Length: 281
Image 1 (cartoon, rainbow, N blue to C red):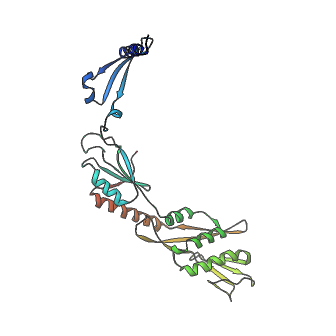
Image 2: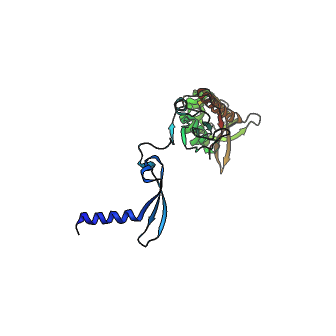
């Protein structure tokens, strides 16, 4: 038997083992699916559904999400590709999502698999402050952090704060007494005669006072407005070593909400669509 003849026999067996149940063979090009009846070598038959979309020049419908990094890119894409009546925009702390094929109001259900996602870009400054806050740190760690972020601090001014930082690095070896002002939370260190403060203290009285807090100015989102945020400074002694912690007040939560609302309001105005606070599951 020649190879060509064997190929003909194999093709004939293959054709006999597979029959198109739907659609009619001459109408396959007009349908998205094909239903086949397949018979294995033991004669057992089974129905198989074959999706024809991968073999077409174009998909049946658009799907997938584009990821963008600026609110303006997000707005532009929604205006270009959004579908009236089925576009939904939702936002949470991580992203803003526009779904173009959501459920129609009072109509058909949507697939929810086509749209655009804005990945929120927080500034390194805001991310750093939030990440460092709320945990007690050694004096050295806090001093290093504040020195690196001194440009964000507006009250007390940078020079005064850096003087306090330098003294913080030295005072733990020279301090003989600490006293906390219960009215404002400020901590006063009384140190021995061998320690001379670099600034921010009273050399004659042998003291240095650390303020109960400070104010920073920073952006929450890239290209967004700056906000002034009060920060509380707290102190404790653990196993004979001073530790410091700074934390945000409730005002910082309001500031974040304001920054978030400003950003989503710009998107709502730009797209002409409401922005719901939440996420899609």
